Length: 404
Image 1 (cartoon, rainbow, N blue to C red):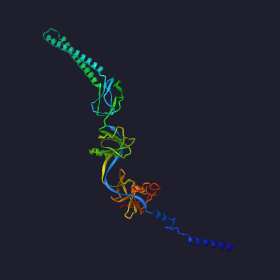
Image 2: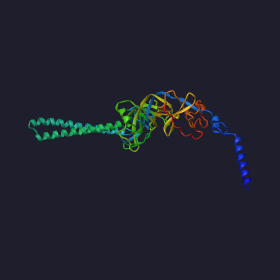
Image 3: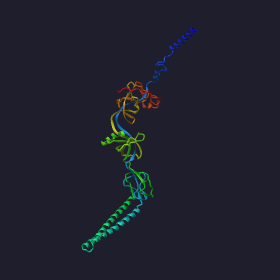
Image 4: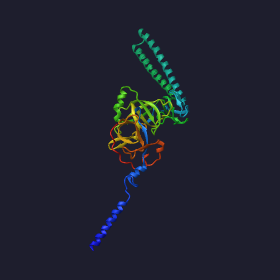
């Protein structure tokens, strides 16, 4: 029994050895092996761009809103009927220009009454002064008593006070008559009419007749983190003019360029920010009151900075790095130190020289020494993994090589 079992085992082992000897090897270049996939894939298509050099503004960005230089709610100072509106809604007006007219007749009557009372009391004063001069002569002749002279002198002073009060009443009535003509307190643009002609308006009303906003120049109030306060105050203290750019909501278009005026006198403890105020000429009126803007304060300028597209900067556990294209169409990862951004570019302060070519698109899955094939940016759009980095999971970030 046992010899037959041993014979069967030996025959099976021999068949297995023969099968493995004649099986095709799956080496690096065998079909299905890793070398075959690499050979089939070939060089990785990437988009590359050279590092450039130019002056880069160092800016501080904050959220803000457009505020008129002056914003005045025009109200009446006297009560009366609104007879006429002398402006068109949205019209530009000058300071002192007529905006509305109240009914002046009641105030004209009050003025005439006050002037009549003043004329009467002036006549009484003049008569009292004549009597005083007469009593003065008679006292010298011992024709009247000294008491009569003193009484007449007091009466003259009394009438002088009455005349002075009457003059104040006349001036007040004349001023009220002037107030029936409502004029623009500042130059600017009027808004929508708040009261229609024919209505009775009151000085105690808080609504007003119309709002006048000064649009040229105009201001922007924005907030920046409190960490920037020392640098800003240093520049303001040295009377250095700081440029401020107002961007639209998408931060793509510059709406206007102005100058920083001042900073608030305290930091908001709830947000940790300080408010800044900038002035803009706004000649083209691209800034409008209460408009949301992104304000960019130019605090300094880096001269001759080295820049690369921001998309070229990769981030790993050891910090920022990028892939530098070598003359033999391979790439090498290199650690870099980055600075501020300017639009779609980022400043590289250490680790790269101007003119060196870096991988901008297609860096996902690259490793140092990988073969690449450069192609235009338009050709890389819509490609799969390895071109735009949007078709699959990214490979683990390699350890960056040393600097140049």
